[in-house]
Length: 161
Image 1: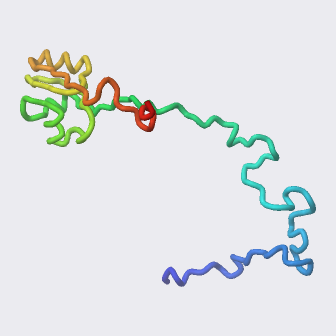
Image 2: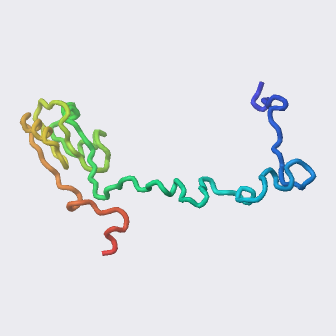
Image 3: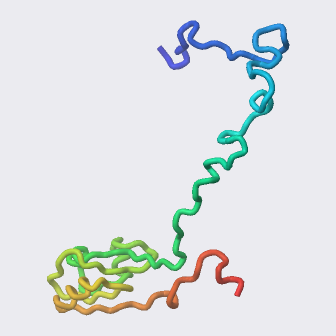
């Protein structure tokens, strides 16, 4: 049996009733809508509540907000640095090895242990990561952010000044 040979059982599907075709047949004149009133006339919008403010308009629309000045970092943990080859760790070397995204800032976090001396350069460090790197004999260098203070606001917030 093939897909084009499939068919419904006889009598399973019936043609839809064509109403409003004159008083001679079933469904003529008022076409099953009763007499008078809103329902007998044109279509009513879904969700219409008889002139009362609809539920869709009554519920609040704004859910929080998106901070245009949020600074996002690519997180790298100490256990990743422990497996890292070489003694200099910077955003460029991390990008070359595919450990962070090609765009964005890098932050070093303190999960894991560090047993060797590393020279780590990043845009931000957690306090535990900084302590662990320095206690292993390494150095911590905080890189300058590529923007002054805050990143430029998205949209036209600062363009009309």
